[in-house]
Length: 119
Image 1 (cartoon, rainbow, N blue to C red):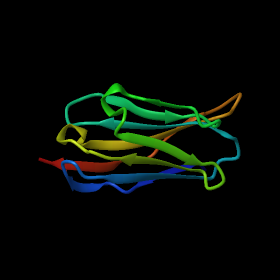
Image 2: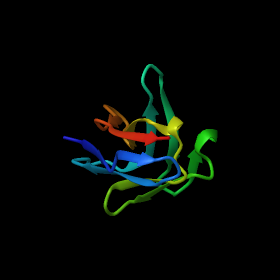
Image 3: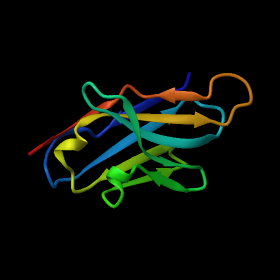
Image 4: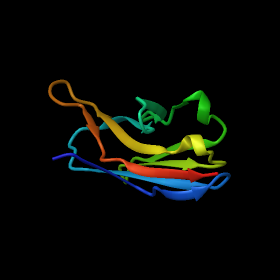
């Protein structure tokens, strides 16, 4: 059974940094894309950053230059380094992975980790 587990959230002051981790286990298929989403209270879940198996990255405009996504394919882990945090970055951050499958389920989500940025 595929499991996706995030860690690293917490409370930080504006201007501070946090690093989120997302570890995947139980998959038999290659992990194509690894993504970080976030959802603030009362708002929709939005894509923050993504990284392909080849290391190509993509970022939401709101986090460009402040957040860096990376992955370790051997450890089946992705990281989100968040610098210069702002109160508007406060949200629950979710890890999402997409497996290379032809049939069956390809998308898996973690349970989320909360990030709170105080002003």
